[in-house]
Length: 177
Image (cartoon, rainbow, N blue to C red; front, side, top):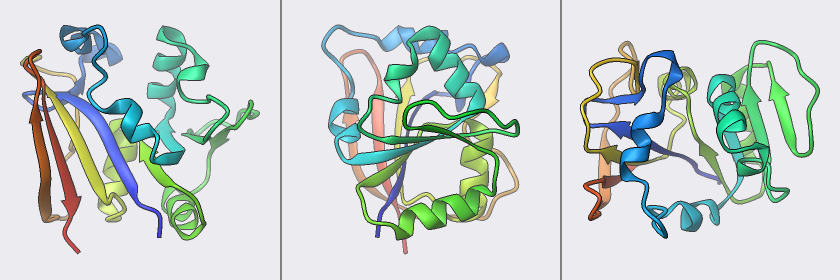
């Protein structure tokens, strides 16, 4: 069965974005030639689930090819119908049903790149199998929290912890069965 993995960066105080969906704090750990395992990780997936706000931000800042590179299916979770482009589908249905269907199909693993609403919904339904969380050495004070309140407790098993000379620490957990 396919796994769903969260691969995301957060500030030390638990925010994935500052107010107004500002992700500029991520630039603090940008380093030429260092991708913090991203390329290796994306080699294990063929499907991406992402919230519309995160998708729109990346579209504006990097371009659509960051997600839809022709080698994976992209599901943008949105409340508004939009025509798909390439292998990108704008999905307005039930997120749990989508993930359960994708997990039951053949293929590589599934990657969730946020945002917070999507992550929270997946956690409420115990659908995230693996957490790869990069902690950026900054306290941003407020914004969008990685983990929201009001979800069930979940036990995790530490698989790996890495530190980088930029100060970033990356934690890799698996959900305990």
